[in-house]
Length: 112
Length: 114
Image (cartoon, rainbow over all chains, first blue to last red; front, side, top):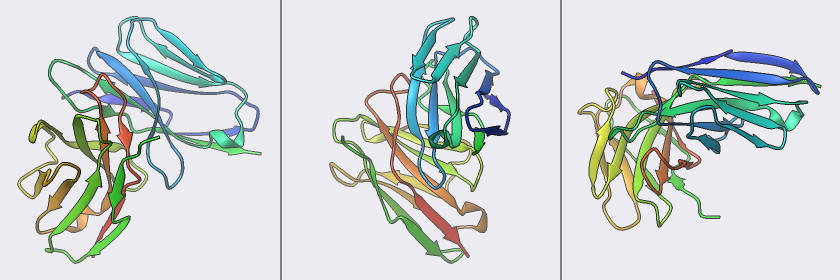
């Protein structure tokens, strides 16, 4: 079945440093979504990427979808303590499937 | 903003007992889901539900599990004869459409099987 790999599993950064998490799918995706889960919370939708090579920005967050629609990245510029949490990518393969396949997530830990 | 609500927030049960986890999806959403997250691990798809029937299920969703939409608002997950390894956070989610649209997750039910 479809697999979504995400690295790194943990990332420690100093506040103000940049952060990037990478996501790779074993199959071509119809779209990819990114979610953020705060400690003790539930996943919250951040963004969806659909087009090959697409780049979207939300303030300090930049999301990219690869040309082959098999990989994606999330980059946070100048991290803040409010960015703490786990960032999950989730791939949708289409073709009648309903469920998203989530990566294992990247736990972002920020040291002040 | 509309929310997905889940009850209870925490359920403790003994091994072998049956549990029912409840969810109220967002009212105008058409697809409903259950996901499971073992502590600190990834979010795993269990089942999706559309038009009053299961539309897709994962390998995890075996005969021990069932889902139901008993009325126009509730969406339940039943686990028969719980096992220790069923201990996890169970998230209900809903979306307007299948995988093309964002999932809205509830706050989850933490199930502890002792």
